Each structure stands twice: as C-alpha cells, then as structure tokens.
Image 1 (cartoon, rainbow, N blue to C red):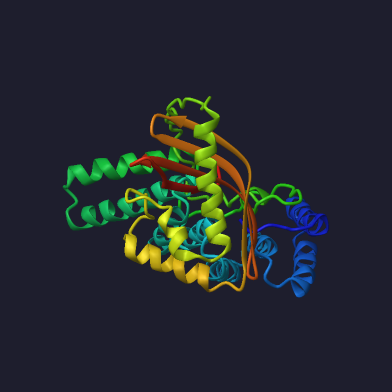
Image 2 (image 1 turned 90 degrees about the horizontal axis):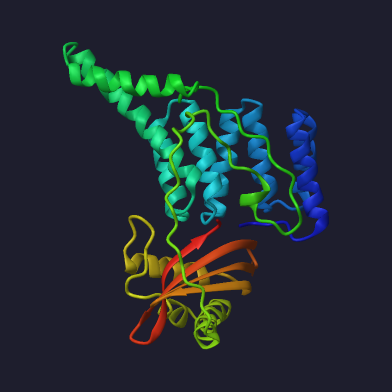
Length: 322
C-alpha cells in the first residue's frame, strides 16, 4: 500500500533492509531515524523500524510502532499481522487473535494472516484443553486433543510462545508497495501444516472488445468518482451482493468509506495496466491502483470482481494485493 515515491526513497529503504539482513541493527536504526526526521509519516520506513525493534527483542517498542501504524494506516494489513506476532510472543493470544482478524478484515486474501490465525486458535485451544484436564484429569477426550495439538507444534519444530523473530526484509525497488517491500513477519507462532492450495476456477478470457470496454468504463468511472470525492456516485458502483468486510454491515461500511473519502484534502486514483476476464455474467479485473492523497501515496495491486445485474456491471468483490 504505502509506497516510496522516488528512487532516492527506495534506495534509503533498501539500505535499511540490507543492514537488517546483515545484523547491523544499530546502523539500520540510525539510518531509519534520520530518514524519518525528514519524512515522519513514511509508512514503509516506520514498518522497517518496527522490524528492527523486534530483532532487538524490544517488544514493547515494536508493539508501539506497529500499533501507531494501524492507527495511521488502518487499510494496511501487514502491521496488524506483525502486531499479532509480537502479542503471541508474549502469550497475549487474545490480542494476537484480534489483530489477525483485523488484518483479514482489511484484506480477506491475506494468506499469512489466515495461517497465523489458525496457529493462534490452536494455542488457545490447547490452553482450554489443559484447563479441562486440570479440572478433570480423567477427561480422555481433552487429553487426546491436547496431545494432538502438542504433537502438531512439536512436529513443526516451533512453539507458539517462542521468540518472535521477523523474516529478513527483501530489497525494495522504487514504486513497489509496502506489502512487497518488506516480507511480513513470519511468526514463530508455528509453521503451519502445508495445505494444498485450492485450485482456482478457470475463467474465460473475453474476446469481445465491447464487453471489455463496458467493464473498463465502469472501473474508470468508479476511480473517477473516488478521485472527485463524489461519494454517492462512488458507492453506487457497489452491488447489493458486494462482499463486505467481516463483521461489517452495508450502512456502517458505506459511512466509513464516506468519512475516509470526504475527509481527505485531495484524492487522485489511477487505474493502470488493467486485465479483464469474463465468465458469463462475472467479470474479473486485475490492475495497478495508483492512489495519491494529502495523507497517503500508494501503488498496489487491485482486483475487482463485477457481476452483471439487470444489464449493469456492479462490484461484487474488492481485493488488494495478490
């Protein structure tokens, strides 16, 4: 999401990432702090600073960094995920669960958060089974379930309460999203049991230029209404069957979008390199979304799934990343 907007900024983040990878944490922190003096709102460098604190085992400082990032950029799922890792490392599993659920609510397609949430649930379950055995040592069902969960963690050579160690960040190129710029913390929660990826349904690529044009006109008009802060028109592009974030209802979601859009000084949203595929009355559009406002600059991958309803294309799903 939040991105570096020039090669100079990209170089700064790349330098800090390399220092982290080589274990030169004081030098990395010094460079990050110097950059943040000039650019205090830069989400990517703040994210790196949180990783440095985590590497230094300064858990409270890292939690403070990622917590502030979730407040300033609630649309970014990675800070929620990393915050959950830190909570798990200090046995605060309920807080870890809540943070991961927020990450998934922000981006339902965020696989890392789903895996980590499963591990947190497993640890919470083991605590409950252990408590059941304390109350009734003869409870064979609880004993079996507890053994199965403990074997899972033993077999993956990782304990959920273990030390949280961030994965080394990767090199950042200019104009790449923070999602790709720094690999999200892969927690020591536990290595998830490998699961075969669900096969994606085949889609039929559109051969009709007319159909493609109709879909792209809708996407361009949607981005234009967003850029013009014409919230009523913007919201009208979302169909009645639009997949809302978990726990949200249409009214609260619409009001939240209205506040976020109309609260910005200016907004510019560009759709670049769109690719359209259509299967019957369902269209899928993959594109780069270039977002620029007085509060945030972002270059992210975006997917819109549209359904044709009464001859009109309307948004049914909206996903960031992937």
